[in-house]
Amino acid sequence: MIVIGLTGSIGMGKTTTAKLFAGEGVPVLDSDAVVHDLYRAEAVPLIESAFPGTTISGVVDREKLGGVLRKNPANFSKLEAIVHPLVRERQESFLEKARKEDQRFALLDIPLLFETGADARVDKIVVVSCAPEIQRQRVLSRPGMTEEKFEMILARQLPDADKRRRADFVIDTGKGVEAAQDQVRGILQRLATDSGQGENNA
Ligand SMILES: CC(C)(COP(=O)(O)OP(=O)(O)OC[C@H]1O[C@@H](n2cnc3c(N)ncnc32)[C@H](O)[C@@H]1O)[C@@H](O)C(=O)NCCC(=O)NCCS
Ligand SMILES: Nc1ncnc2c1ncn2[C@@H]1O[C@H](COP(=O)(O)OP(=O)(O)OP(=O)(O)O)[C@@H](O)[C@H]1O
Image (tube, rainbow, N blue to C red):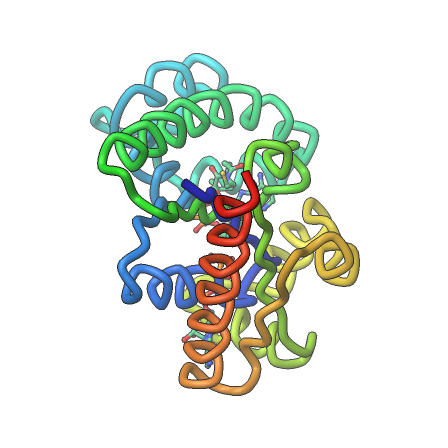
């Protein structure tokens, strides 16, 4: 099974592109969605004890937690030390299931793929990217998003140019969904061909 790591900076199109891979039959795990799920489950007591007052009725209030982080960005490391190992556990069970099903590919959508060293745990890296003006426009048009939040998140992410340099494949999401879909199909074909050759050579 080929494990594909999909990453890209905020608003570059990870979720949209992951859906395109899913549409081609690839099992996909979205790490941001896993975090949101953990915030209704096992992460709750850990977060309440590290950041008192940020959970309400057994659920993490992301707005409140975000506020604590904005006041003191040093708290990000404390939060990540709680959340990332839990995300990793979920990723491992997802991959185990995909292996049992004999899937040819499995895709992990990981916003912080390089920053957390997860790049070492995947076979191929796909980076989604587009022009910075498009990225900014996309992100700032989201409800509740502000220039300040955008800058805070960007500052914690590896720059787009570095991500692209470290990618096996770069998908340009600035040209529309159909163009991205073609690129997704091209990548899967290429990986299938390459791995087929690998098996013949073995
Ligand atoms: C800061 C929090 C509370 C804000 O929640 P909110 O619902 O407003 O935003 P959401 O989770 O949808 O994330 C918005 C964008 O920020 C990115 N992002 C989230 N956390 C981080 C982080 N620690 N470092 C860099 N980028 C991050 C996301 O990938 C996404 O692109 C939340 O993102 C969080 O708890 N983050 C810590 C967990 C984490 O590191 N997640 C990253 C992927 S595993
Ligand atoms: N190939 C594409 N063509 C046109 N629009 C796109 C494409 N990919 C993504 N978009 C648009 O860009 C916006 C951001 O996309 P998406 O939510 O997939 O990004 P993301 O990287 O997952 O964001 P985040 O980092 O915040 O989770 C959405 O409005 C989406 O419709």
